[in-house]
Amino acid sequence: MADKEKQEKNTEKQPELQPKVKFEVYGEEMIEKEVKSSGNSGRIYLPPNWVGHTVKIIKVE
Picture 1 (cartoon, rainbow, N blue to C red):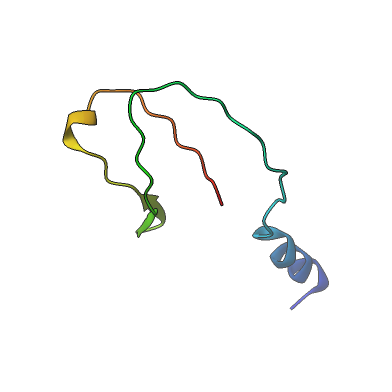
Picture 2 (tube, one colour):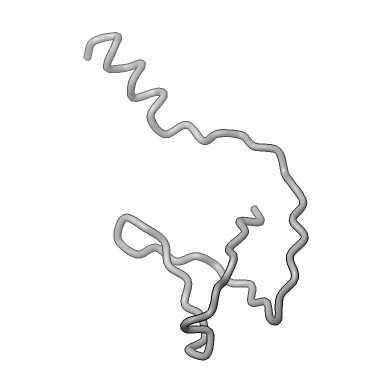
């Protein structure tokens, strides 16, 4: 493998370290859940009565 290809592989999926920040959010209800794998993505199931409402997702860890 060429050096350039090795460098590209090393930089492809390195997580960016971001400092923790504080969010202050006003809302009506909160649910804490674990994101499950779904193909090439992640998924969270929410209650059916939340359909049509706006939600905010915050990664906490």
